[in-house]
Image (cartoon, rainbow, N blue to C red; front, side):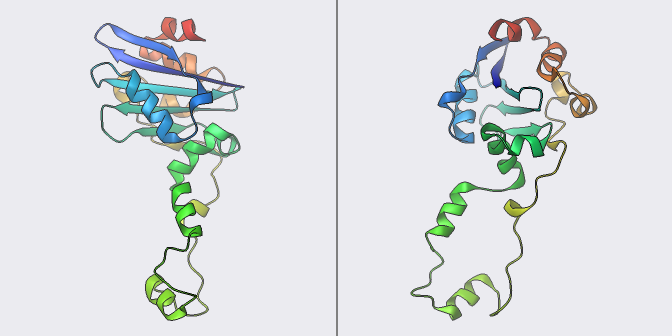
Length: 182
């Protein structure tokens, strides 16, 4: 079972909203939800956990690139929402995979010379394993400093387990608003 919430920073503190994961089919859907919850392009923190197995934090600051952290990448990668985060952090991109399946390398009917020129590989050479094919590490993955300026140090974030989201909310001063949507 998953729990997910959005914490949006405002002038008066934090506002929390329950995040309906049924509407989230991709990481960009999650980012769009977070940006929609923002007040005046201020910080939004999306918190996701799966039954104390892992938790994830996504931080969105206006139009800047989102930042991510997953407490246990190996456990998260085995779940639908966690795999969205671990795939992003490891550089695996489903859209790239789909393009590769479409054979858009500029060749026609298996022209091997063109394939070698395009990839830079000689006949018989194997392509190096890309970052998307790396094994998922057990333990934390991502940017542990993404909440440093909000009162959750990277050391604290790296050691959280159990009721991590409540501890994060407490450090942010958002315990009451998070518990209201739990």
